Length: 111
Length: 117
Image (cartoon, rainbow over all chains, first blue to last red; front, top):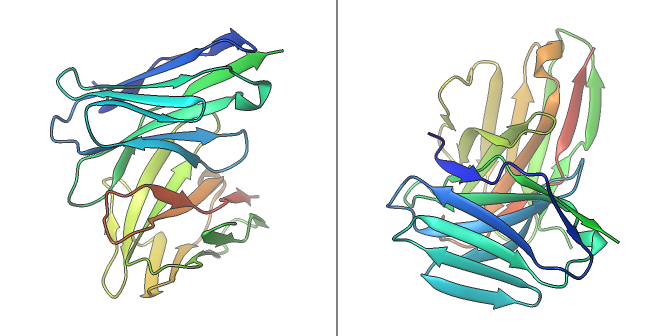
């Protein structure tokens, strides 16, 4: 079992729709959770981070964390073609500060 | 603007030569930096943790004598790929947590695409 698992994708949604990206993790001691966006040929950039159970909203993005279920998700509202990218879920276990990344979900937003 | 600067962005070298990649934190001090490797359509694979003033910590399976890491100052870490071979061709990315908390989000350099011919 992988430490961080994401939807295998690819995920395709029409412009204006809600895109839902999911991630589960195996280490119950994980303390911080991140979503990064990576365009093809580029390095990742931070979209959202969340530390506590519940929802965290930032513009069109909402991160949701459920530590009991070891589940973290990212919702993108009013999806735009510019949101088309690979989304990486990352989890920190604390201490060493190393992030473990999922394999990523590729999102395509069709105009 | 970029908070982590990585150079070069692209390098082509001949088999058997060495290549040095630099990673600088621009407006903060980074006692820890991370080096990742990414193959096409694959996720990031952590290679090593670079620690300022001490030896790097390598992940299992990563050859420390091949991938030399030096973190000589609070703003600079370097990765040297020694005696490069075509299988070392990859996208190498450095990152650093911005604040003193190692669990803070990572800021990534722009990456270095290495091609070994």
